[in-house]
Length: 321
Image 1: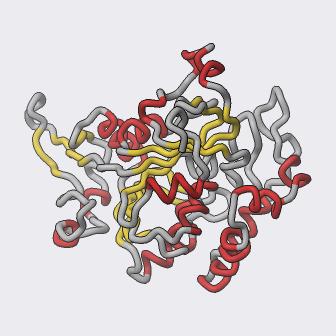
Image 2: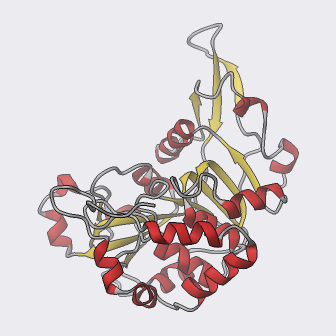
């Protein structure tokens, strides 16, 4: 990497910034702007014992689980909505005890990420009180004490000091080693711009010790400085920028392309068994050493059909089942 730029290949970024046992937080939302190009590179490099902060998770994390990269996941939801209502490699791993997992409500998990971005060790919430999310723990306190990346408790319930008689649920914030984000635009100094919904991406970028951003388009620093009010995050929070057109495929990327229904259907079928999943990974990850190889496998005609129509923000007439 040159001293005046943070631009790197996916291979170099994953190799130099992600270590076995790291806590990863992954941006996007279920089937929307997921950093699939970076995730496929993690699988290629066979990173292991990763602790995943999932939030509203999708098939990219399911791929990491099926490929044996994950030891622990904290999640609120993991699916390819409309195709797989609960991701299959995740479900089997949980049922077989192959991974540790715990779950929070979706709103609590995003609040926790914001607390982490603010440098807080916990956030007080009411959202989970009175539900089984409080009564049932996926990871016991005893097991938590054995895990270097986990807080000793899932939460602590205490009386609200400013409203006696009312309870609060104190939820610990994660200590994120690396955040993975896909953006529409980024520049060599690390500044990036997300169009449309940003989800938890800004918070995890600020909270993480290191952040890798893949992008649809790499533009000059000067280009993003012309309209700084549109930028999502300063380059001060970013360690690597990875140019990756269609880097969120098969998920959608606002103002660029829609999600690939055919791919999600194929993945739903392939992820039903470990054997079929392994063949899927061999075809779409191992046999495609780079992101360019992956795009060539998909083909230009298929990718062009996913391009959004200006004025709509999506692809009218796209077959979604």
